[in-house]
Length: 283
Image (cartoon, rainbow, N blue to C red):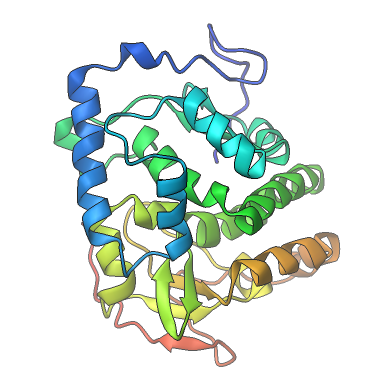
C-alpha cells in the first residue's frame, strides 16, 4: 500500500488494472520465477503453514513459469471467489482497498532480474503471486482479506489509514502463527524471501510477540530491513473474528491519544514468545 494521489497511468483502466500480457514474458523471466520458486519450495515445508502449501498445490502454481493470471483466477474463483488482476505498480489506497473488498487481489506483472533475486524495493509478480495468492485459496484467510479491504475504505474516511496499514504489515505481509505448539510463517513478505524465511523463525534478533490489535496498531515498522518484531496470531479464525467484531472507529479515536511504539519495543503486558537481542543489522 502506498499513499498515491494520481489518475490511472496511460493504458490502465479506471480501476488501475492492466492486461497481464502473459505472452510478453521472456524465457529469462520464466527462469527467474522458476529459480525463486524452487528455492522457496525446497525450504518452506515445515516452516510455513500447511494451508500455504495446500494453496500452491490446489492452484497448480507448481507448474513452471510465471503463472497466467486468467488461469490462476479461474481456479481461485471456484475455491473462494477471488481473482488476481494485474496493475502497473503501487496503486492508491482507495483503489487497493476497493479491489480487496471485491475479492480482487492486485499484483504487479513485472518480475525482478537475475541480479535482484534476493532483494528489490517494489513488490514484483513473485512477491505478489507466490507470496500472497496461495492463502487466498483458504476460505477463512480469504474472508479476512476482504474484511480488511472493507475496513480500509472505512479507515480512509476516518483518516486512519496509517493505523490500519500496520495491521496489514504485521499480519498479511509479516505475520507468524502458532500451530501445534510451534511458530510458523504465513506473511507474504516472509514466505517470498529466502533470507527472511530463515530469519523470522530462527534468528535470535527479533521479538516474537503475541498478537494484540491495539498494541500492534501503535507499533511502527521497518521497510528497509528484516523486522525487529513479529506478531504471532493463534489462528486465522481468531484473526478474522477480531477484525470483523472490533469497532475500529472508537479504537482509532483511542489511539489518537497514545504515542507510537518503536518497532523493537516490548511492553510488560506483552505475550513474549521470544525476547529478541536486536543485534540484526541491515542486509
